[in-house]
Image (cartoon, rainbow, N blue to C red):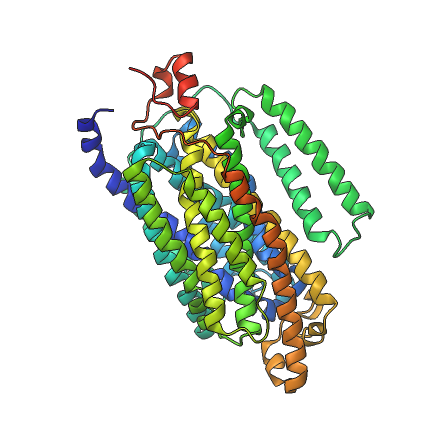
Length: 529
């Protein structure tokens, strides 16, 4: 693409980007709002031992659908596929808001319904995340992508600032249900803008979607998540259900590997992993998901129980984490566009993220809000170094025709890391909590739904008993972060082996390249004219 052509295309890029940013805000706001509402949801429905499934179901839905959305976009065009994902997300949001209401049964079924509908919402969210990144990848060459991804980071920052505040306000003054209903008007605006402004080429291939591969991958991933959720908690590690799930996961994933090698259009092309940078950044994305989702979902619990913050204030207390991630993401995006160099950023990010996670292991009853805010800033800075570079390296490692699959794979590994992290952390938290004095503060409010966190009852306990209970909660939460450190410490080690391959300065259509040029493109080099 010549400079004149690029200049002519940019106004369209900016118009499309406006619609994409609204859709990105939709997904980001949901994550931030729901995290602050979770303690109230648990208080109403009970089910403390299942509360992480409200997040896990969403992440699992996102995870299993992401590669499918990415490949659908490659085969059938991104606009219609992307708009479909927005509609599914909005339907899931409406159903989540109605969980346990008179429309769908009583409160006794509320937690089960909410978990199921969060999975539906996650199916749509998988298309939102990969769609935004793949569409930008279609329109903007890798060397200039950092600038536009910096703009996306700005919208993420607005959502990160607004999300906790809106979520806290809704939880304190309206109802937690509006944490989901608020998506509907915003989603309506996103649909209107995207339908009228996003004009992308429509195309269709003769190939069919690899539905068998998608099904096998979904079964294998779901089985592994169930193992990490139930193992050592509801079932012994050597019990029949856990061993059965392990066998199911092994068979499904081995079969998935065979199917992908023979499928004409595999959901997750295994040949992509022959590229060292792509393989390394996929593992780094997996570990980043562990840290990101773990911190986001256990910090509000700590703030609202141990630190006694309201839902609104717990949203405000998350702002240091968001601020650190935002500022660094914007700076890194511009630096990559200016210099074309990126290798150092995931290394530094891994070191800083590990330091931040290590600081969070120090959380206890006596930790002040200032101290915890400083800890979160460090974690946010580390994550900011990784957020932009992980997707950029993944996209620069593949041919243009595989852009959707590569974007989907990168998002998939981050999501599956989050899914495993939430499941594993939830099991660790529940097991640690069960052996502490904090268990005496939970119960009653959920009936058959199981125990819940009764914040009012907690505040009414005698001071000595309350301190004992809060100590148990703080210990269980800090124990989760100790486990997180074991995973994040591998990030800088893996990042050290990433090769500094020049970023392409143009997007070359795959159909116009020769096999030799495709090989060069797979190595990150622009084909020779």
